[in-house]
Image (cartoon, rainbow, N blue to C red; front, side, top):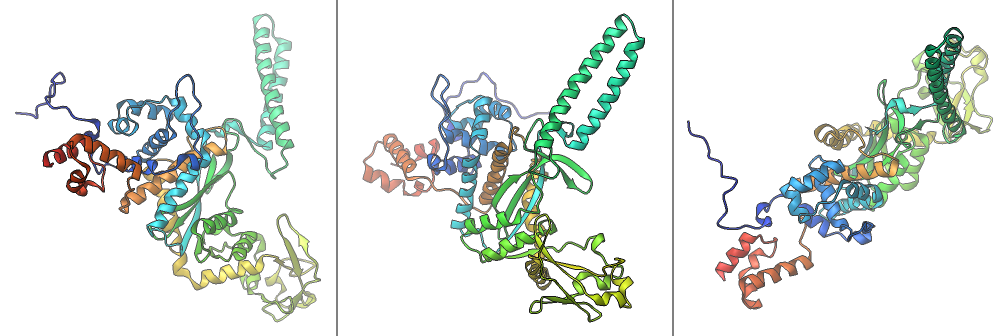
Length: 516
């Protein structure tokens, strides 16, 4: 049987070719090249790399390298270093530059804000090409594992368990020392010293935790200090970061992102403010799931004039009445009288005082009619005071949201299809389910910034967008062609008008030369 014949590795080529001819005109690497060349990197905030004995690398080249890497699922600085030496597309893109992995890693670590500005530039491109509708957006978050194991994450309860275990072991060692002799005694002393060193470490962590008064349940992560132990779904937990994202409905393009280490409760207000600034309007509707259902955030949405549709969570078991017909939502509020009327027709009034909970103020409403009400046992389980309703300062905004959700169920159903599209691409298709960087939230933000940037560029390319060649580059191309064909400028322009919209390759230059 005959097979396809390979070319000999030692065969010399009769006709030489340039590197540019090895990259197809429709190759996405050319789009990356033109996209970065069209940016004013100094204005965006990229500084030159600090020289270490020789001239630094151009930030444009390192940015091209990272965008290419993330678009092709390569994030590690060492992997990118390796690809620079063997990947023909990267050799073309970087002009055969080969930065080492330390230089590559520092570029990402040192430029989180500039990377976000490049991402914002993709949003501007989408707006300029009318790919963002700015009428319906959706927000959601996803958890991304940090470079910190559960073993190296501590809270007060966990540290107390470790100290209790160590104290127990130290007591056992003391008892063993009393009975041992010779080499056995020396071995036990070594074990006891190791336990004491461990104890000192946990005592130090315990002091740091007790000194942290910023949160109710403080944590310390020793490998990546800003990461936090959070619930991912159900009962599954991870030490991770939270990526808050906002998606436009028209083409599922990301318009905003932010890396945090908190849950969704207090995130919606900031997301809406940023969305308003980015889109330049507040005439859009925002969709969120029930994790964002927080009264103070609804007030923020109302203050900036944005309509929200946030899923209404179910009533907690502690707030349920014995008979669901007497739950709080069945009591009618009269804003004129500042009172409630129960299903039995009794009026519940307030003494006018505001009481303070952890994050909000509220009033209490009650009635003396509860004492002799025939349905009291179905309305409340309280033995003495009867039914007491609480109304927070944000209840009116919560009720307005609930009304919008009820009136527009078809719009809210679009939420999951919008927000899960980027997450499905990023986490399931690309496999980016973790943060690759360490040592803090800014570097984690830089990592996710490149992910978001790559996602938007991928979407833009699929939607048919192609960056224009800058005027400076057009001039360089014309000069090259003039030298090649050796003709006057007027005659030259008459023959290459068809090539003005694209960057000619070596093959095209040769063709023009023959025509002229």
